[in-house]
Image (tube, rainbow, N blue to C red):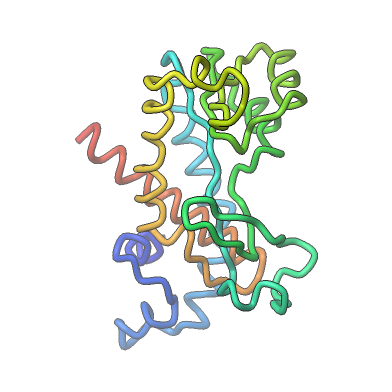
Length: 213
């Protein structure tokens, strides 16, 4: 596990290249053992999440893409067929084939498992929709999302302070990208989840060390 966190910390995307840094480290054995640690990594991250204080005035909800191939291969890729989908990455204005972490469709399930003590969620335009707003309102949560500029009432609704608070999550996503959260080279669902979990765990550990050291 220490080696997995080290790999994420160094930003080395390829597990094979990381193993080549050590003369005595077999890539196949390292890969097999890292996948066996999935449940343990998940449990550690969940226990760390329980320590997070969710009593602030606002919570920010967002998603980030995890492509599994280059855009030119979006419609020819066979890996994860039946699981991955074509999505749109607004920041780079490109379509990708892969997964989205914490997509709007999983928002209700996420909030059911999180149980925050505040009631205000800040999301981007990807969470704009009456059905989702109503579902969260029935659960006791108020979801705020900015309106498109051409939408009626957008100028009054789009509070610049709320938009600035929401954008702070972009710096966290940049760090997750550094830990290879968006550059997942796994070729199996277990491997994919393992690498994503270790990236998030590495980020959480770095955050705790910086804040509580």
